[in-house]
Image 1 (cartoon, rainbow, N blue to C red):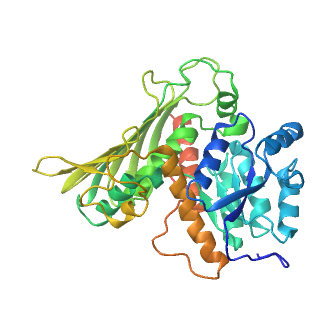
Image 2: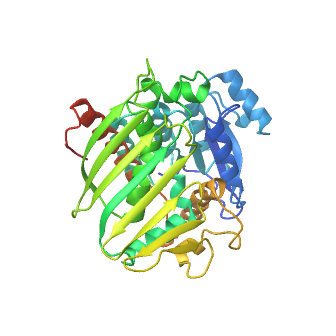
Length: 387
């Protein structure tokens, strides 16, 4: 709900706060760059660490005013909601187990939430957060950043237009190698701690990206799955490799592989889709290209901002073809899409129909996917209904 006395300023950058993302936090820096790239946000407040000393030091390093640096997110939500020029939106970039509690505090005060994935560390919290978002006038944006890539938008449009026919087969994988051996630095520690990451390791960290990407491009809804999750590194308490068979509503079949113990793979997110009229293939490490294979014809290479690019891809491309755009720009596209929606809400207008970003409902689907994978694997890869 809107807060009485708040200044609904209709011009200028969106006033942004951040929870988490202090010194030495990789993803916090990414979110800040993404928010700045198109000049639509200004970071004005933060509760940047669960450690007060680090929160203060991080805020000073980012140039925040002393009275806008907070020791905890609840204190920040309460005070910012009362300020005439308090934050309009907050980016939540903490470990997974904090997402629900932090997002809830801002949503109930009418502050828009931009949250890192997965939505929460467990299904109970995910369902409660979906209800909290539905009860709030504020927007909820989930940063599945790969949905912001232009050629992903192009593939989505082509599937929707029926250019490859009815989808039959979906193959998606996300392979990394950085956890092939035990690691004890910060990013590895919380991601392999079930109390902070949730029960899914690689499944929650990168498997959710693969699952979300497949659904975003194809529009298919998952019906059931069979999952084999495993931890290859001795003593690891969450999975570091997963093979998942997928059955979609309508009859399509899929396979998802995610691994963080695959030497030689840095960030190998790959999607292949096959329908009755042709196929599509996209690879994140070469993101400006999309392969289209009409059945019975030579494969065609489609380039970002090249000939034949559709409107959805063109509207999230910034520079001419041949100049690479990638991770940071894709991330920034989510922030810019969110900004269009926030500005519309700021001015009492409907969100434009062509604005696309992952929502709390996409986040809930992701946590349902993780939960089903864990349950299936515990039952020797039994088929599990999802949802």
